[in-house]
Length: 281
Image (spheres, rainbow, N blue to C red):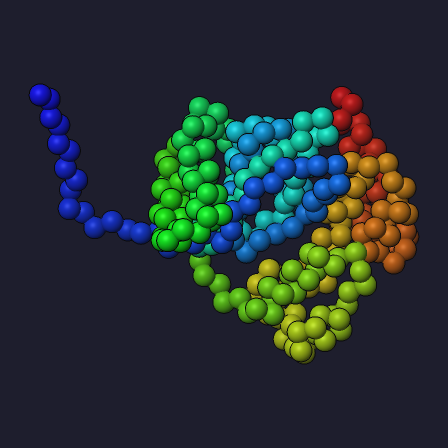
């Protein structure tokens, strides 16, 4: 009889101080439309089936089956599915984690990897996590936490990326509320007065706190959000500029064009022509 015993050294293991906030399983259909948004945590986005594109800040790239997109905290992103082969994906929100390059120690806004060769391994972690949160059997929280740590460490080992624990920022619930409110209502008329009334904070403290949280003022964050969505619509639809101005919350086409040119150094029509030219070349 052959018998092999493998022992483990008595080393002190460092636990990852991370937490699973949610796991989502979704499939695109014709009436689903995603808008650019940010999270204060890391999101892992795994493509189970289908094709589409991912938008991260000002970059667009194609995604396909078995791609994993890692989005670090506070990075604007969204996805777009193809109609003939719609995206099916699993997304995980993870608090207390960000990824950085192993050698340079530079934190990247996002990373894209294809794990076709590790499909079976990744499917085990993701499907088991889904099953645990759906069934909610005894000890499911502890099982999810341990599965998450194993999955993240496996991911770091395969990609040869170093894990970096995200620094804990002192973020007030009001700042989080403002960010979420702007993300969901950016097409509406929003002013500092609006945000001040909603949070019961004076305007100076509100602006100061939000700048510490996001690195920009609430109004600039709102403008960035509108411009990002306008770029997306200019690139993916044939809507007239006036309609896009209205859809993204600008009071007039002229004001929209003025702000768009200030932020991008080109008019909306010039931006659309440039994107059309790149797509056809």
